Length: 228
Ligand code: CA
Image 1 (cartoon, rainbow, N blue to C red):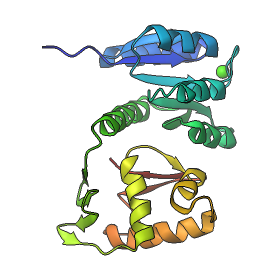
Image 2 (image 1 turned 90 degrees about the horizontal axis):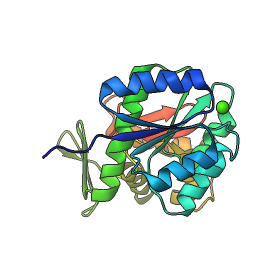
Image 3 (image 1 turned 60 degrees about the vertical axis):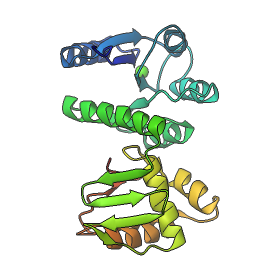
Image 4 (image 1 turned 180 degrees about the vertical axis):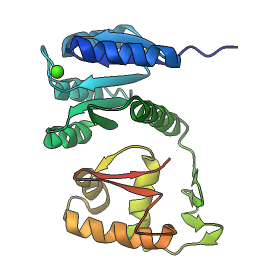
């Protein structure tokens, strides 16, 4: 039995970038579909099985934000990776808050893009399987028994620290914005400074070197990502 190829939809109005993506992804074994504006993107997703969307934000005929919003309102869980420009920090954060999974900043390297695509696909599988146990390197989290171990040793977490780690585990591989984490863990009732303190505490408990974290990665100015 052979699996169908992974199909990636490129949504981008600039022909050179579309071409770069198409000629880079096809030799990797991905099947590539293309849309040049937001409306065409939604139509394409409607008519085809698409596994990952690479989405430019500045699009004619429906902005990238609207594409994300419409897909998530329609309960689509298709992974979306935003192609963001270096200067558009706020746009990146807004896209993630609307439900995008990840972003790459233009100009991006192919290796980075491929890694983000693989992470998005893994995240999707995890969501579908909802694995009750998470393992990454020396970290193990048993979501049923609320047990956390590092290198086989039990780690004692406060309830809030556990909630924070659990949220990261449920979205492992995905960038979570500060705003999203604060809303989910504190009901929106705290600020980024406070979140940083909790992340620091958590790192001290689960990282070998909290200054060089391998599990909880900082996305500068955006949020955090747990390595899947
Ligand atoms: Ca554009």
